[in-house]
Length: 262
Length: 262
Image (cartoon, rainbow over the protein chains, first blue to last red):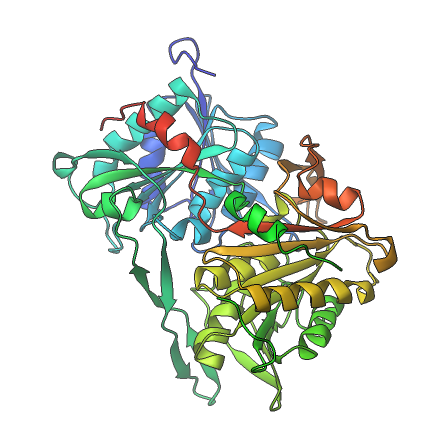
Protein backbone atom coordinates (compact mmCIF):
# COMPACT_ATOMS: atom_id res chain seq x y z
CA UNK A 1 0.00 0.00 0.00
CA UNK A 2 1.42 3.36 -0.99
CA UNK A 3 1.37 6.09 1.63
CA UNK A 4 1.19 9.83 1.47
CA UNK A 5 4.03 11.24 3.58
CA UNK A 6 2.31 14.61 3.73
CA UNK A 7 -0.95 13.39 5.30
CA UNK A 8 0.46 12.18 8.62
CA UNK A 9 3.79 11.84 10.32
CA UNK A 10 4.82 8.19 10.12
CA UNK A 11 5.83 6.30 13.26
CA UNK A 12 9.30 4.76 12.91
CA UNK A 13 10.58 2.09 15.32
CA UNK A 14 14.39 2.13 15.52
CA UNK A 15 16.66 -0.60 16.87
CA UNK A 16 20.14 -2.07 16.34
CA UNK A 17 22.46 -4.79 17.65
CA UNK A 18 25.38 -2.64 18.77
CA UNK A 19 23.60 -1.21 21.82
CA UNK A 20 21.74 2.09 22.25
CA UNK A 21 24.87 4.22 22.69
CA UNK A 22 26.49 3.13 19.40
CA UNK A 23 27.21 5.94 16.91
CA UNK A 24 25.42 4.00 14.16
CA UNK A 25 22.02 4.08 15.85
CA UNK A 26 22.54 7.71 16.82
CA UNK A 27 22.94 8.57 13.13
CA UNK A 28 19.88 6.48 12.20
CA UNK A 29 17.80 8.22 14.91
CA UNK A 30 18.96 11.65 13.71
CA UNK A 31 17.81 10.98 10.14
CA UNK A 32 14.58 9.17 11.13
CA UNK A 33 13.55 12.13 13.34
CA UNK A 34 13.58 14.44 10.31
CA UNK A 35 10.95 12.17 8.71
CA UNK A 36 8.62 10.93 11.44
CA UNK A 37 7.83 10.25 15.07
CA UNK A 38 10.64 8.00 16.33
CA UNK A 39 10.44 5.29 18.98
CA UNK A 40 13.81 3.74 19.85
CA UNK A 41 13.87 0.29 21.51
CA UNK A 42 17.44 -0.96 21.68
CA UNK A 43 19.68 -3.18 23.77
CA UNK A 44 21.60 -1.73 26.71
CA UNK A 45 24.70 -3.52 25.47
CA UNK A 46 26.09 -4.93 22.23
CA UNK A 47 24.24 -7.96 20.85
CA UNK A 48 26.37 -8.37 17.76
CA UNK A 49 26.27 -11.88 16.28
CA UNK A 50 23.09 -12.76 18.14
CA UNK A 51 21.28 -13.86 14.97
CA UNK A 52 17.57 -14.46 15.49
CA UNK A 53 18.00 -15.25 19.20
CA UNK A 54 15.08 -14.62 21.54
CA UNK A 55 15.09 -14.50 25.35
CA UNK A 56 12.89 -17.17 26.91
CA UNK A 57 14.63 -18.12 30.14
CA UNK A 58 15.33 -14.63 31.53
CA UNK A 59 12.74 -11.92 32.25
CA UNK A 60 12.94 -8.88 30.00
CA UNK A 61 13.18 -5.40 31.46
CA UNK A 62 12.60 -2.00 29.86
CA UNK A 63 14.11 1.33 30.99
CA UNK A 64 12.66 4.61 29.73
CA UNK A 65 15.41 7.00 28.61
CA UNK A 66 13.21 9.68 27.09
CA UNK A 67 9.47 10.22 26.51
CA UNK A 68 8.55 13.28 24.44
CA UNK A 69 5.62 13.88 22.08
CA UNK A 70 7.58 13.14 18.96
CA UNK A 71 10.40 11.04 20.38
CA UNK A 72 10.62 8.10 22.77
CA UNK A 73 13.67 6.04 23.71
CA UNK A 74 13.78 2.77 25.68
CA UNK A 75 16.57 0.33 26.45
CA UNK A 76 16.13 -3.36 27.22
CA UNK A 77 18.21 -6.34 28.30
CA UNK A 78 16.90 -8.30 25.32
CA UNK A 79 18.19 -9.26 21.90
CA UNK A 80 17.37 -7.22 18.77
CA UNK A 81 14.43 -9.58 18.06
CA UNK A 82 13.18 -9.11 21.64
CA UNK A 83 13.38 -5.32 21.09
CA UNK A 84 10.97 -5.57 18.15
CA UNK A 85 8.59 -7.83 20.07
CA UNK A 86 8.68 -5.55 23.17
CA UNK A 87 8.35 -2.45 20.99
CA UNK A 88 5.21 -3.68 19.30
CA UNK A 89 3.50 -5.52 22.15
CA UNK A 90 4.49 -3.74 25.35
CA UNK A 91 5.59 -0.22 24.43
CA UNK A 92 3.54 0.74 21.36
CA UNK A 93 0.75 -1.81 21.74
CA UNK A 94 0.48 -1.57 17.98
CA UNK A 95 2.52 -1.54 14.81
CA UNK A 96 4.81 1.24 13.59
CA UNK A 97 4.68 2.34 9.94
CA UNK A 98 8.31 1.31 9.51
CA UNK A 99 11.10 -0.48 11.37
CA UNK A 100 14.72 0.53 10.75
CA UNK A 101 17.72 -1.21 12.28
CA UNK A 102 21.37 -0.21 12.45
CA UNK A 103 23.45 1.48 11.28
CA UNK A 104 25.48 -1.66 11.92
CA UNK A 105 29.17 -1.25 12.62
CA UNK A 106 30.43 -3.58 9.85
CA UNK A 107 29.08 -5.46 6.85
CA UNK A 108 25.86 -7.44 6.80
CA UNK A 109 26.26 -8.35 3.13
CA UNK A 110 26.23 -11.93 1.86
CA UNK A 111 26.10 -14.69 4.51
CA UNK A 112 26.38 -12.10 7.32
CA UNK A 113 22.60 -11.69 7.02
CA UNK A 114 22.14 -14.99 8.87
CA UNK A 115 24.40 -14.11 11.86
CA UNK A 116 23.28 -10.51 12.12
CA UNK A 117 21.20 -9.22 15.02
CA UNK A 118 20.58 -6.05 13.00
CA UNK A 119 18.95 -8.03 10.20
CA UNK A 120 17.17 -10.39 12.63
CA UNK A 121 15.27 -7.38 14.00
CA UNK A 122 14.36 -6.43 10.43
CA UNK A 123 13.18 -9.98 9.65
CA UNK A 124 11.13 -10.07 12.87
CA UNK A 125 9.27 -6.93 11.76
CA UNK A 126 8.86 -8.48 8.31
CA UNK A 127 7.26 -11.60 9.83
CA UNK A 128 4.67 -9.19 11.30
CA UNK A 129 4.17 -7.57 7.86
CA UNK A 130 5.79 -4.27 8.90
CA UNK A 131 7.99 -2.66 6.21
CA UNK A 132 11.55 -2.86 7.50
CA UNK A 133 15.09 -1.88 6.46
CA UNK A 134 18.47 -2.81 7.91
CA UNK A 135 21.43 -0.46 7.36
CA UNK A 136 25.10 -1.40 7.73
CA UNK A 137 28.35 0.45 7.14
CA UNK A 138 31.39 -1.43 5.83
CA UNK A 139 33.73 0.13 8.33
CA UNK A 140 35.23 -1.94 11.14
CA UNK A 141 37.35 0.86 12.61
CA UNK A 142 36.67 1.73 16.25
CA UNK A 143 36.00 5.36 15.29
CA UNK A 144 34.07 4.59 12.08
CA UNK A 145 32.53 7.69 10.52
CA UNK A 146 28.77 7.25 10.06
CA UNK A 147 28.12 10.83 8.93
CA UNK A 148 27.97 10.03 5.19
CA UNK A 149 25.31 7.33 5.67
CA UNK A 150 22.69 10.09 6.10
CA UNK A 151 21.65 10.62 2.45
CA UNK A 152 21.35 6.84 1.83
CA UNK A 153 19.21 6.36 4.96
CA UNK A 154 16.97 9.31 4.12
CA UNK A 155 16.46 8.17 0.53
CA UNK A 156 15.61 4.57 1.47
CA UNK A 157 13.29 5.46 4.37
CA UNK A 158 11.32 7.91 2.23
CA UNK A 159 11.05 5.47 -0.67
CA UNK A 160 9.84 2.56 1.48
CA UNK A 161 7.32 4.77 3.31
CA UNK A 162 6.01 5.90 -0.09
CA UNK A 163 6.03 2.60 -1.97
CA UNK A 164 5.61 0.06 0.84
CA UNK A 165 7.13 -3.41 0.57
CA UNK A 166 5.47 -6.71 -0.41
CA UNK A 167 4.43 -8.81 2.61
CA UNK A 168 7.25 -11.09 3.67
CA UNK A 169 9.98 -8.94 2.07
CA UNK A 170 12.42 -6.58 3.82
CA UNK A 171 15.59 -4.78 2.73
CA UNK A 172 19.26 -5.34 3.63
CA UNK A 173 21.14 -2.13 2.80
CA UNK A 174 24.95 -2.05 2.98
CA UNK A 175 26.91 1.15 2.56
CA UNK A 176 30.57 1.31 1.49
CA UNK A 177 32.95 3.24 3.74
CA UNK A 178 33.53 6.06 1.25
CA UNK A 179 32.27 9.61 0.91
CA UNK A 180 28.83 10.20 -0.64
CA UNK A 181 30.52 11.88 -3.61
CA UNK A 182 32.58 8.73 -4.30
CA UNK A 183 29.50 6.45 -4.34
CA UNK A 184 28.51 5.36 -7.81
CA UNK A 185 24.86 4.80 -6.92
CA UNK A 186 22.57 2.06 -5.63
CA UNK A 187 22.53 -1.56 -6.88
CA UNK A 188 19.60 -3.89 -6.18
CA UNK A 189 21.23 -7.30 -5.95
CA UNK A 190 21.28 -10.80 -4.52
CA UNK A 191 23.18 -12.18 -1.52
CA UNK A 192 26.63 -13.42 -2.63
CA UNK A 193 27.30 -17.07 -1.84
CA UNK A 194 30.21 -16.64 0.54
CA UNK A 195 31.08 -17.92 3.99
CA UNK A 196 33.26 -17.29 7.04
CA UNK A 197 36.11 -19.73 7.38
CA UNK A 198 36.83 -20.12 11.08
CA UNK A 199 40.27 -19.61 12.47
CA UNK A 200 39.92 -20.22 16.20
CA UNK A 201 42.54 -18.48 18.32
CA UNK A 202 43.25 -21.23 20.87
CA UNK A 203 44.95 -20.34 24.17
CA UNK A 204 45.53 -21.58 27.71
CA UNK A 205 44.40 -19.71 30.83
CA UNK A 206 46.78 -19.25 33.83
CA UNK A 207 45.44 -22.49 35.33
CA UNK A 208 46.18 -24.48 32.18
CA UNK A 209 42.62 -24.70 30.88
CA UNK A 210 42.23 -24.43 27.13
CA UNK A 211 39.90 -21.90 25.54
CA UNK A 212 39.11 -20.69 22.04
CA UNK A 213 38.27 -17.28 20.61
CA UNK A 214 36.11 -17.39 17.51
CA UNK A 215 37.71 -15.46 14.67
CA UNK A 216 37.58 -16.06 10.95
CA UNK A 217 38.10 -14.82 7.47
CA UNK A 218 35.47 -14.04 4.86
CA UNK A 219 35.80 -16.24 1.80
CA UNK A 220 33.89 -15.38 -1.35
CA UNK A 221 34.02 -17.45 -4.52
CA UNK A 222 30.88 -15.88 -6.00
CA UNK A 223 32.20 -13.10 -8.22
CA UNK A 224 29.06 -12.37 -10.25
CA UNK A 225 28.17 -8.74 -10.85
CA UNK A 226 24.62 -9.19 -9.54
CA UNK A 227 25.81 -9.81 -5.95
CA UNK A 228 25.97 -7.48 -2.96
CA UNK A 229 29.69 -8.15 -2.47
CA UNK A 230 30.45 -7.05 -6.06
CA UNK A 231 28.35 -3.91 -5.65
CA UNK A 232 30.13 -2.90 -2.44
CA UNK A 233 33.60 -3.63 -3.82
CA UNK A 234 32.74 -1.38 -6.74
CA UNK A 235 31.60 1.56 -4.60
CA UNK A 236 27.85 1.03 -4.88
CA UNK A 237 25.33 0.91 -2.05
CA UNK A 238 23.87 -2.64 -2.11
CA UNK A 239 20.15 -3.25 -1.56
CA UNK A 240 19.11 -6.92 -1.22
CA UNK A 241 15.42 -7.79 -0.86
CA UNK A 242 15.34 -10.49 1.86
CA UNK A 243 12.66 -13.03 2.78
CA UNK A 244 12.11 -15.18 5.87
CA UNK A 245 10.72 -18.08 3.85
CA UNK A 246 13.78 -20.35 3.80
CA UNK A 247 12.19 -23.13 1.74
CA UNK A 248 14.48 -24.30 -1.08
CA UNK A 249 11.62 -24.53 -3.58
CA UNK A 250 13.85 -25.75 -6.41
CA UNK A 251 14.81 -28.84 -4.37
CA UNK A 252 11.29 -29.98 -3.42
CA UNK A 253 10.88 -32.12 -6.56
CA UNK A 254 14.32 -33.70 -6.14
CA UNK A 255 13.64 -34.77 -2.56
CA UNK A 256 10.15 -36.01 -3.51
CA UNK A 257 11.78 -38.40 -5.98
CA UNK A 258 13.57 -40.11 -3.09
CA UNK A 259 10.19 -41.69 -2.18
CA UNK A 260 11.03 -41.52 1.50
CA UNK A 261 9.53 -44.26 3.64
CA UNK A 262 9.45 -44.63 7.41
CA UNK B 1 27.74 -36.98 -4.85
CA UNK B 2 26.31 -40.41 -4.07
CA UNK B 3 28.12 -42.53 -1.47
CA UNK B 4 28.41 -46.22 -0.90
CA UNK B 5 27.52 -46.93 2.74
CA UNK B 6 29.20 -50.32 2.54
CA UNK B 7 32.65 -49.03 1.57
CA UNK B 8 33.45 -47.05 4.73
CA UNK B 9 31.78 -46.12 7.97
CA UNK B 10 30.59 -42.50 7.67
CA UNK B 11 31.51 -39.90 10.29
CA UNK B 12 28.42 -38.22 11.73
CA UNK B 13 28.65 -35.02 13.79
CA UNK B 14 25.73 -34.73 16.22
CA UNK B 15 24.52 -31.60 18.03
CA UNK B 16 21.31 -30.04 19.37
CA UNK B 17 20.03 -26.95 21.17
CA UNK B 18 18.51 -28.58 24.26
CA UNK B 19 21.87 -29.45 25.85
CA UNK B 20 23.83 -32.70 25.79
CA UNK B 21 21.75 -34.45 28.46
CA UNK B 22 18.42 -33.98 26.65
CA UNK B 23 16.58 -37.21 25.76
CA UNK B 24 16.20 -36.05 22.14
CA UNK B 25 19.96 -35.99 21.45
CA UNK B 26 20.40 -39.30 23.28
CA UNK B 27 17.92 -40.91 20.87
CA UNK B 28 19.66 -39.29 17.89
CA UNK B 29 23.06 -40.55 19.09
CA UNK B 30 21.67 -44.06 19.60
CA UNK B 31 20.41 -44.26 16.01
CA UNK B 32 23.45 -42.53 14.46
CA UNK B 33 25.80 -45.01 16.20
CA UNK B 34 24.15 -47.90 14.37
CA UNK B 35 25.14 -46.23 11.08
CA UNK B 36 28.54 -44.62 11.54
CA UNK B 37 31.28 -43.20 13.73
CA UNK B 38 29.63 -40.55 15.88
CA UNK B 39 31.16 -37.34 17.23
CA UNK B 40 28.88 -35.39 19.57
CA UNK B 41 29.58 -31.69 20.15
CA UNK B 42 26.73 -30.17 22.12
CA UNK B 43 26.02 -27.39 24.59
CA UNK B 44 26.34 -28.03 28.32
CA UNK B 45 22.97 -26.33 28.83
CA UNK B 46 19.83 -25.56 26.86
CA UNK B 47 20.27 -23.03 24.03
CA UNK B 48 16.70 -23.13 22.84
CA UNK B 49 15.64 -20.06 20.85
CA UNK B 50 19.24 -19.03 20.19
CA UNK B 51 18.70 -18.79 16.43
CA UNK B 52 21.93 -18.36 14.50
CA UNK B 53 23.75 -16.75 17.44
CA UNK B 54 27.54 -17.07 17.66
CA UNK B 55 29.80 -16.35 20.64
CA UNK B 56 32.29 -13.57 19.93
CA UNK B 57 32.77 -11.83 23.28
CA UNK B 58 33.28 -14.89 25.52
CA UNK B 59 35.98 -17.56 25.12
CA UNK B 60 34.69 -20.98 24.14
CA UNK B 61 35.63 -24.05 26.18
CA UNK B 62 35.39 -27.74 25.34
CA UNK B 63 35.10 -30.63 27.83
CA UNK B 64 35.75 -34.20 26.72
CA UNK B 65 33.05 -36.56 27.99
CA UNK B 66 34.12 -39.66 26.08
CA UNK B 67 36.79 -40.59 23.52
CA UNK B 68 36.51 -44.08 22.04
CA UNK B 69 37.49 -45.40 18.60
CA UNK B 70 34.00 -45.21 17.20
CA UNK B 71 32.45 -42.64 19.51
CA UNK B 72 33.49 -39.24 20.86
CA UNK B 73 31.48 -36.82 22.96
CA UNK B 74 32.32 -33.21 23.85
CA UNK B 75 30.36 -30.46 25.56
CA UNK B 76 30.91 -26.74 25.10
CA UNK B 77 29.67 -23.45 26.55
CA UNK B 78 28.80 -22.28 23.03
CA UNK B 79 25.66 -21.98 20.95
CA UNK B 80 24.60 -24.71 18.49
CA UNK B 81 26.35 -22.78 15.68
CA UNK B 82 29.52 -22.55 17.80
CA UNK B 83 29.31 -26.34 18.30
CA UNK B 84 29.46 -26.92 14.55
CA UNK B 85 32.35 -24.47 14.14
CA UNK B 86 34.30 -26.01 17.06
CA UNK B 87 33.49 -29.52 15.86
CA UNK B 88 34.90 -28.91 12.40
CA UNK B 89 37.81 -26.63 13.19
CA UNK B 90 39.08 -27.60 16.65
CA UNK B 91 37.90 -31.16 17.35
CA UNK B 92 37.78 -32.90 13.95
CA UNK B 93 40.07 -30.54 12.03
CA UNK B 94 38.04 -31.59 9.02
CA UNK B 95 34.51 -32.17 7.80
CA UNK B 96 32.16 -34.98 8.82
CA UNK B 97 30.17 -36.84 6.17
CA UNK B 98 26.94 -35.67 7.78
CA UNK B 99 25.69 -33.32 10.48
CA UNK B 100 22.50 -34.18 12.37
CA UNK B 101 20.89 -31.93 14.97
CA UNK B 102 18.14 -32.61 17.52
CA UNK B 103 15.92 -34.36 18.22
CA UNK B 104 14.44 -31.02 19.23
CA UNK B 105 11.94 -31.00 22.05
CA UNK B 106 9.11 -29.23 20.17
CA UNK B 107 8.27 -28.15 16.64
CA UNK B 108 10.66 -26.45 14.24
CA UNK B 109 8.10 -26.33 11.46
CA UNK B 110 7.10 -23.14 9.66
CA UNK B 111 8.57 -19.88 11.04
CA UNK B 112 10.22 -21.76 13.94
CA UNK B 113 13.08 -22.51 11.55
CA UNK B 114 14.31 -18.92 11.99
CA UNK B 115 14.37 -18.98 15.84
CA UNK B 116 15.67 -22.51 16.15
CA UNK B 117 19.16 -23.29 17.43
CA UNK B 118 18.69 -26.86 16.18
CA UNK B 119 18.17 -25.66 12.61
CA UNK B 120 20.87 -22.96 12.92
CA UNK B 121 23.43 -25.73 13.51
CA UNK B 122 22.11 -27.49 10.41
CA UNK B 123 22.32 -24.30 8.34
CA UNK B 124 25.87 -23.66 9.59
CA UNK B 125 26.93 -27.10 8.29
CA UNK B 126 25.08 -26.36 5.05
CA UNK B 127 27.04 -23.12 4.59
CA UNK B 128 30.16 -25.32 4.70
CA UNK B 129 28.61 -27.69 2.11
CA UNK B 130 28.19 -30.56 4.60
CA UNK B 131 24.95 -32.55 4.16
CA UNK B 132 22.84 -31.81 7.25
CA UNK B 133 19.47 -32.73 8.77
CA UNK B 134 17.56 -31.27 11.70
CA UNK B 135 15.04 -33.46 13.54
CA UNK B 136 12.27 -32.20 15.81
CA UNK B 137 9.44 -33.89 17.68
CA UNK B 138 6.11 -32.11 18.08
CA UNK B 139 5.82 -32.92 21.73
CA UNK B 140 6.13 -30.20 24.36
CA UNK B 141 5.52 -32.44 27.38
CA UNK B 142 8.30 -32.56 29.97
CA UNK B 143 8.52 -36.34 29.60
CA UNK B 144 8.11 -36.43 25.81
CA UNK B 145 8.63 -39.91 24.36
CA UNK B 146 11.34 -39.84 21.66
CA UNK B 147 11.41 -43.63 21.17
CA UNK B 148 9.26 -43.66 18.03
CA UNK B 149 11.49 -41.13 16.24
CA UNK B 150 14.03 -43.92 15.60
CA UNK B 151 12.75 -45.29 12.27
CA UNK B 152 12.34 -41.77 10.80
CA UNK B 153 15.87 -40.77 11.84
CA UNK B 154 17.37 -43.98 10.49
CA UNK B 155 15.57 -43.70 7.16
CA UNK B 156 16.55 -40.07 6.59
CA UNK B 157 20.19 -40.45 7.66
CA UNK B 158 20.69 -43.45 5.35
CA UNK B 159 18.98 -41.71 2.43
CA UNK B 160 21.01 -38.51 2.75
CA UNK B 161 24.29 -40.45 3.13
CA UNK B 162 23.38 -42.38 -0.02
CA UNK B 163 22.01 -39.57 -2.19
CA UNK B 164 23.85 -36.54 -0.81
CA UNK B 165 22.23 -33.10 -0.86
CA UNK B 166 22.72 -30.24 -3.33
CA UNK B 167 25.20 -27.61 -2.08
CA UNK B 168 23.42 -24.93 -0.08
CA UNK B 169 20.43 -27.18 0.79
CA UNK B 170 19.69 -28.91 4.12
CA UNK B 171 16.63 -30.67 5.54
CA UNK B 172 14.20 -29.66 8.29
CA UNK B 173 12.42 -32.83 9.47
CA UNK B 174 9.50 -32.61 11.90
CA UNK B 175 7.91 -35.68 13.44
CA UNK B 176 4.35 -35.79 14.82
CA UNK B 177 3.93 -37.01 18.41
CA UNK B 178 2.17 -40.24 17.44
CA UNK B 179 3.23 -43.86 17.20
CA UNK B 180 5.11 -45.03 14.10
CA UNK B 181 2.11 -47.18 13.15
CA UNK B 182 -0.18 -44.12 13.15
CA UNK B 183 2.10 -42.12 10.82
CA UNK B 184 0.74 -41.88 7.30
CA UNK B 185 4.16 -41.40 5.68
CA UNK B 186 6.58 -38.63 4.73
CA UNK B 187 5.59 -35.40 2.94
CA UNK B 188 8.19 -33.18 1.24
CA UNK B 189 6.76 -29.69 1.65
CA UNK B 190 7.32 -25.97 2.01
CA UNK B 191 7.52 -23.83 5.16
CA UNK B 192 4.00 -22.64 6.10
CA UNK B 193 3.66 -18.85 6.33
CA UNK B 194 2.79 -18.56 10.00
CA UNK B 195 4.02 -16.50 12.93
CA UNK B 196 4.17 -16.28 16.71
CA UNK B 197 1.90 -13.62 18.15
CA UNK B 198 3.50 -12.40 21.34
CA UNK B 199 1.61 -12.33 24.57
CA UNK B 200 4.08 -10.96 27.13
CA UNK B 201 3.35 -12.00 30.70
CA UNK B 202 4.13 -8.71 32.49
CA UNK B 203 4.80 -8.76 36.25
CA UNK B 204 6.34 -6.74 39.09
CA UNK B 205 9.24 -7.98 41.23
CA UNK B 206 9.16 -7.61 45.06
CA UNK B 207 10.87 -4.21 44.76
CA UNK B 208 8.24 -2.92 42.34
CA UNK B 209 10.32 -3.23 39.16
CA UNK B 210 8.41 -4.33 36.07
CA UNK B 211 9.52 -7.30 33.98
CA UNK B 212 8.17 -9.29 31.06
CA UNK B 213 8.22 -12.98 30.18
CA UNK B 214 8.11 -13.71 26.47
CA UNK B 215 5.27 -16.09 25.65
CA UNK B 216 3.13 -16.32 22.56
CA UNK B 217 0.73 -18.26 20.46
CA UNK B 218 1.33 -19.77 17.04
CA UNK B 219 -0.90 -18.25 14.39
CA UNK B 220 -1.21 -19.93 10.99
CA UNK B 221 -3.35 -18.56 8.19
CA UNK B 222 -1.60 -20.65 5.50
CA UNK B 223 -3.79 -23.75 5.19
CA UNK B 224 -2.42 -25.12 1.89
CA UNK B 225 -1.81 -28.84 1.68
CA UNK B 226 1.78 -28.38 0.48
CA UNK B 227 2.94 -26.92 3.83
CA UNK B 228 4.74 -28.55 6.75
CA UNK B 229 2.02 -27.50 9.19
CA UNK B 230 -0.64 -29.27 7.10
CA UNK B 231 1.50 -32.42 6.85
CA UNK B 232 2.06 -32.57 10.61
CA UNK B 233 -1.59 -31.90 11.45
CA UNK B 234 -2.47 -34.80 9.17
CA UNK B 235 -0.08 -37.28 10.80
CA UNK B 236 2.72 -37.10 8.23
CA UNK B 237 6.42 -36.54 8.90
CA UNK B 238 7.30 -33.21 7.19
CA UNK B 239 10.55 -32.75 5.27
CA UNK B 240 11.32 -29.19 4.12
CA UNK B 241 14.43 -28.53 2.02
CA UNK B 242 15.91 -25.32 3.50
CA UNK B 243 18.42 -22.85 2.05
CA UNK B 244 20.54 -20.13 3.64
CA UNK B 245 20.23 -17.84 0.62
CA UNK B 246 17.60 -15.41 1.93
CA UNK B 247 17.43 -13.27 -1.23
CA UNK B 248 13.84 -12.59 -2.29
CA UNK B 249 14.60 -13.11 -5.98
CA UNK B 250 11.04 -12.35 -7.10
CA UNK B 251 11.27 -8.85 -5.61
CA UNK B 252 14.55 -7.78 -7.22
CA UNK B 253 12.87 -6.40 -10.35
CA UNK B 254 10.23 -4.54 -8.32
CA UNK B 255 12.84 -2.77 -6.19
CA UNK B 256 14.98 -2.02 -9.27
CA UNK B 257 12.02 -0.13 -10.74
CA UNK B 258 12.18 2.30 -7.81
CA UNK B 259 15.31 3.80 -9.44
CA UNK B 260 16.85 4.50 -6.05
CA UNK B 261 19.12 7.52 -5.89
CA UNK B 262 21.40 8.69 -3.11
